[in-house]
Structures are given as C-alpha cells and as structure tokens.
Image 1 (cartoon, helix red, strand yellow):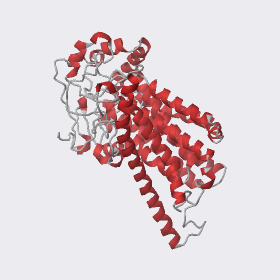
Image 2 (image 1 turned 90 degrees about the vertical axis):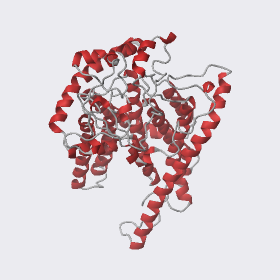
Image 3 (image 1 turned 90 degrees about the horizontal axis):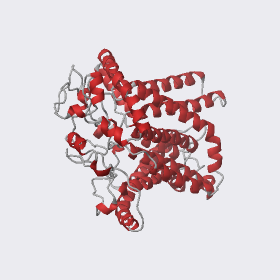
Image 4 (image 1 turned 60 degrees about the vertical axis):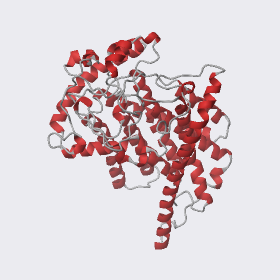
Length: 506
C-alpha cells in the first residue's frame, strides 16, 4: 500500500513514478510524442496505435484520433487545474458524490419507486437512465478512446469505472438526464398542481443544479474524464431526456393498449441492441453495462404491459398502505406505516437478491449445453474476449455474475489510483471484468486474422491481465436483469398488495 502525497488522505493516493518497461514506448506512441509523457497502463485505450488503426474501420479510427488528440491536450490542462484546486476536503467530496452517479446507486434507488406506487415516474427514470448507460457504453466501445493520461493527471478512483473507456462520460450523461427529468416533475407539481410552495420549488431546483454540477465537475476534478468527455456526456444526457419527453405519452399509451405488438417488438429489439453493440479493441466492461441496462428497460416496459393486459393494475397496484389517514395521522398510524415501509424495502431487495442468485446459477448450468447443441446446427454469434461454450465445460463459480451483487457492499469497491494509473488494491476489492492474477492476455487483438498483431501483443502482454468471459454470461445477464425489472415493477408490488401491505403510500 502506498502512502498519501501532499498530506492527502488515504483515498487520494498518488504515485509519481513513471513506467520503466522497455516496451512502454510502443503504447500510444503518438500521444507520447505529442505531449511528452507516458499514459496510464491500466485503463483501456493505450495499446499501440497500430492496433487501433488496423482493427477499427477507418471512420472509427478517424473519430478516435480526433478524440485522442483532445484528450492529450486536455490532460495537461486538467493537471494544472488539479494543482490549483485539490484539497483533502474536495478530494473526499468529489470522490463520494461520484457514487450518486453510478449504476449501483440507480439500481438500489429505482426499485423503491415501484415498491411505493410511483410506477410512471419509475418507468421514466429507468428509460432515461438506462438509455444513457446503453448509448454512452455504445459510444465508448465504438470510439475506444482512453481516459485523461496519468501522468500528468492524478486520477482519484472509487469503484472500477476506470476500467472502461473514457469517451463519453456516463456519469455526466446520467446526472444531467436525471436532474432534468426530476426538474420536469417538480416544475409540473409547482406550476400545474400547486403541490409545492415557491420556497420548496427553489430549493429543489438548487439541489438539482448542485447535484449535476457536482457529478460533472467531479469527473474533471478526479481526473476520470476530459472536458470533451464530459461535454459530450452532458449533451447526450440532455438529448435522451428531450427524446423521452417527446415520446413518453405515446409510449405509455402503447404499453397500456394491451397489444401483443409490445412484447413482439420489445424482446427482439433488446436482443438486437445486445447483438449489435460495437466490438471494442480492448477488453472493456462497457458491454456488460449495456446488457444489464437495456435488459432493465425491457423488463420494466414488459411489466407495465403485462399488468394492464391481465388486469393486475386495477386490482393490486392501486391499493394504499395501512396507516395512512389523509392529512392527520395518529401515532399508531405513523408507526404502522413506517414499519411496513421498512419491511417492504427489506423484503423487496431480498427477493431481488434471491432471484439473481437462483437465476444466475440455473442459467449457467442450462445455457452452455444448449449453446453447444445449437453450435452443431449452425454458427453461433461470437464476441471478442468471450469464450464460446464449445471451449469450456461449465462456467466457474467465481466468474460471470456474482451471487451477491456488489451494490450491497459499496465500501468493498473503493479503490484509489494516482498518477501513472498505478493501483493499490485493498483486501476484498471487487474488480469488474478483472479476474485472476496478472498474466499475459491472450485476448488482446483476438479475432484478427493470422495473428496479425502478434508482436504488438507480446509488447503489451506484460501489462495485461487474463480476463475470462463466457458466452453464457450474455444471455444470463439479459434474463437476470430483465427479471429484476419485472419483479421490481410488477411482481413484488403485487405481492405486497396480496399481503395487505398496500402499494401506494397514501
């Protein structure tokens, strides 16, 4: 474990040593020549430029070259900004507020809206946020652009987001889209229904601005993204919100029509979005995020269609929780209401965890032999870095989806990285898409004919880790996350209603 520099706390560690590998000059040589420093070795996007130019189509390589030039120039600006602004208090503030823009935060918070009867708001947030994750992940794997170079930037890390490409910033996309969506709800409550006072309206708007600014500027402060990354992320978040607002009424009407065109359209669309996600050059976990969140959209929308189609909406989803008594609540009513609210949250989250554990375990047993049988009949789709079922007997327990999601152990994914991108892992740190000790990665450049980049692979293999992915994981995640959404939006609220706990808070 390294020691902090400049008297910063342990969660703002920095290491100023430069890489000493004799092969390091082959990595991102264009950036080194232009800016005079060596980029991080740990984050994706830093293989030899020859690899990206030969692997990517010309138009993707051209976009990447443009973004890479911007990242190189902006890295020195970010380093100077950090030198002027950094302090222990700000380090802590921006590190931990960044967790409010993570997938983990949203996966915990969003089900609660459905548990308490705010289904339309929950669907809106799911569509907006999950679309932001999918499209930002899509662009990341399309462009394969690195994060700001460290050095000169000091990168402060919480979680494993540094293992993804940098362009665009998913945090910026999510924070802006969510802030705009909630502002729309607050503005409507204030202007159309007079449900909140002018003071409450002003405070709400100020908090939303503070939230968005803290997340977006925090990505610059922590060295996780460049100005270009954040700017495009902000624009993408605003565009997704605007698109949803333009189509939300028609989407709700379509879901409530009860037509079978809903599942017949949504299921193939989800599978196509998964299948046609761009192939990255590096082994980047962006694809895993895309699978999860597009599947959540599928599950939430199917849940709304199904609840209307079979009549569950009118029978079960409009029940009111016991204890609510209008404007005047008795002491007994308050105790009853809060007790049931706590029980709903605990039981609901427990059901989600159990579903994830059971579904993952069953699918990892069932899917590989099914894939092997299908492979005898026709060629199955194959994704770089994912091992086909014909090459393994079963999915090891330690790989794929973890039985207990990392979302319930946020302190266990805290990780700090300073200049050079050097890491200081702690006991119990979970690494998304990083399993096993440091070994040459046979997946670098995989899929290129005749081992075209064998020399490049040799030069960069000393910096790579062996990463194991299995084709069964892809469909497993689709089923698991769609199931989580179905349970959260329909199954669990119906269960609460049957148990007499009600759904709507009052």
